[in-house]
Image 1 (cartoon, one colour):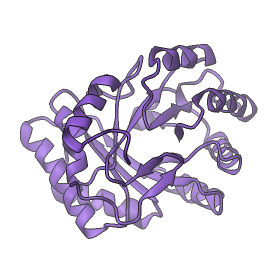
Image 2 (cartoon, helix red, strand yellow):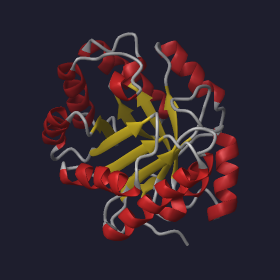
Image 3 (cartoon, rainbow, N blue to C red):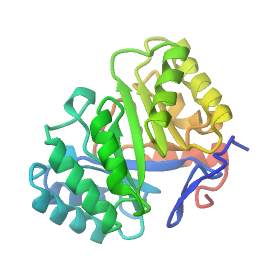
Length: 260
């Protein structure tokens, strides 16, 4: 039995913070056709959630065109919940999108109930505050995230980052770091576990990236992480494994994958 969130979020059939960690596949195609190919490549093997990477879109600087594309994606992803992300280039974003556009797309997506979650970096605190205000009363939850693609900070520093995300108004906290040695993976898991015990009502996503950090994507749920990313046709971060492989491993670790 993993250490669950005491106050999970329910998005249709997906429960973030429930008995099993959720699987999430990023959609990183730059065009609608490319996203459609990503979805087709999964066949009948669907994750619990899709991360829609708006920062990858060729139309991302236009609110109107971005909303058209998001509605089109929602029409074919059916009842699978969406995490809408427009990652800033400083933390691995695939393109530069003005904050005003990002805010308005997030606002419209929340009010049209197209996104279960939206993601903003902790480093973009002013934008995060505006997004949180825009989400009020919509049911869409705010993920505040931090990414370090070069190293794994100390446990104290990682814990401080998660605490800062919570203090800044996150509904869900996220931390992704790059390990340089096996001990770094253990440090990430230790930090995740300590945060879960200190804040049992807050869902979290904790990831050690790269090949070395791959065990965190499998066993992170035992230490408090409520979602793990898998690769579909493409990856959005180093260390993501194919969805089918990840689902098989999670079923073995946590039990049947259709009970959240």
